[in-house]
Length: 200
Image (tube, rainbow, N blue to C red; front, side, top):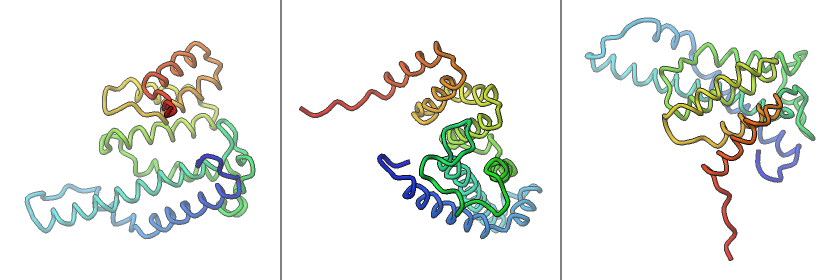
């Protein structure tokens, strides 16, 4: 969220982003995409190579939009493990009629799961996914699964440290009352991301 953002402003911002993400998902011909990735292609044929490149772009856009849907919807909720709307936020514009927040989140997460293959993703996307997985698992009362995935990413030597993933893990440790780990990772956060000193 943006600093000092009101609940109404957050509702509006997230609803607009969700609408844009939904439009991207709707524009992708997913059966054609699934059929394309279901078979091997002759990578020596230039025409086939062009089609593969185009399909890769579409798949990347689809996965990013599917991740974005989960991110913005969880941003509209109170901190995990709650399924309530965040303070001052209205879910009515983004929720399908007759659905509860937990059902809607499960549907959004399921949409991403259909297309997510970790081996195809770079470090930043894996970090983004680990944070989302934690948000979902903590709300499913499966914090152990959330913690395992976050720790795996935090301990991997791939890429730069990720502040959002560290904060998510600290929040999980707080929820579980793992005080020793909370203190350790808060310390690590300060070391890796020292607060900016005011200019004198």
